[in-house]
Amino acid sequence: MVEWIVFQFLSYPLLCWLLFVGVALLASYFGGYVGIVVGCFLVAFAVLLLDIGYATTHEYMDMDIVFTIGVVFRAVLINGVLLPVSALGFFLKRRRKSRSKRIDEAHASAERSNGA
Image (tube, helix red, strand yellow):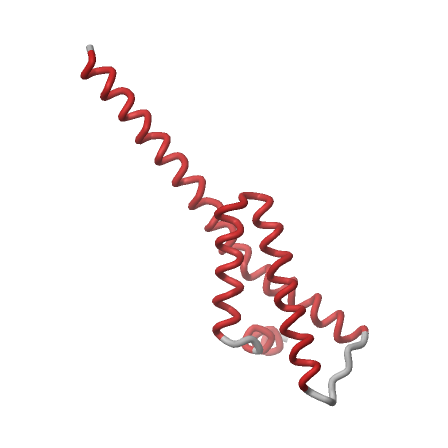
């Protein structure tokens, strides 16, 4: 079972994985909670397109219910692996906002102390 899951991850080339990671990271960074959900749907759509493209180039593959279940399972599996990446993007945004807020407060207090 573990070998099969590893094979599912290795069935996509490195460029696709970079796309998946980029979509998950950027969607969660710019969209927050909604971006995480949108990013999951975008990655699932990319997996669907990649699998349909693979199936149409190979004559022996048919797109039946087993194919659909496989695509859904791969999309859920990949999104599960990308969930920490989405969380990283979300928390990087929050950290940046809190840091800029602290800097603004420090500047405001410095201006008040210089003016007094």
